Length: 397
Image: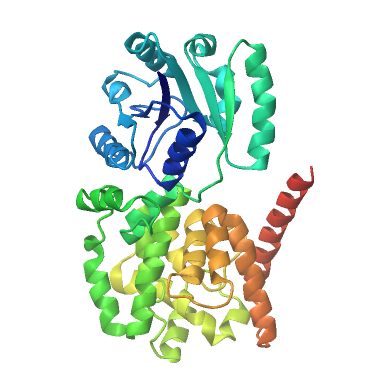
């Protein structure tokens, strides 16, 4: 009997994993494919890790969708870290007369010879590397040569990439209470019913109620959307989630008060305010908002105040929270200007590259409308342009 083993954190199991299952079944035609959720992955620390029971159940829900797919809780029941050699020893004892195939991605295949007891693993099974691109395939072919020279058997399987990331799925659930179709429907229902990857937004209800009373419906919905997007970015880039959600929520708190009141608050800002900003009323509300939050609500956290202050003009040397609020304001879900989907996609993959695109967009927009540009914004543009150029240099190398 031919048995394939597909292990992973499965936090959660998603469409990319399903794609691997389908391609392995099609290519190898195993009699059995075992999904093996790991207990404590030795190669990485995992934030927002669902319980062993929850990850096991999500795998079971997927197994129900396929013939010949089973789920094992061996690694979840094992104490300590999940090492592949221990798992394969156990499977070999359980299925001594059968052919075992261990399925992995190209990144894991690339590092395989550095694992714990790789030669023993190679004695117990054939390695199966899933290649999701031409570059994956080229690197895997080179790695396969080394593995075969070390005495191992391996098979390369081409598997067209499916856009799905466990981290982004968790971020979407935390921020938007949805997986946006990146997992099977039965798995999404389970995630939402069990409140996996939960973030408590109710603690900010008093601020939401305040904003609902002073902002137009359109501006209020924008504020909610910016808070949600800031929370998603905080998950993706490991920023303080409470600060990101709150700063996103209140970033436009002074947007709709009279310009004269915005100006008076701006003049009281302890942060430097440039002459260009003072002569551009559209920039007042961010500066005014940071002052208002401190004077009226006692908010003294410098990170939050600075993120609100610079969310319109940006600046050179922004910290992570400042970057997140600036970008969340630009790509919040109600935005529908040309290329916004591109900006979202770039930002979710590389925050600094998203900032380059944002700075470029902002400056081109200001020029087209004959507006002045604060030196702060130019400093940010220069910083992220250099970042963009550095990426180009790495690509050329």
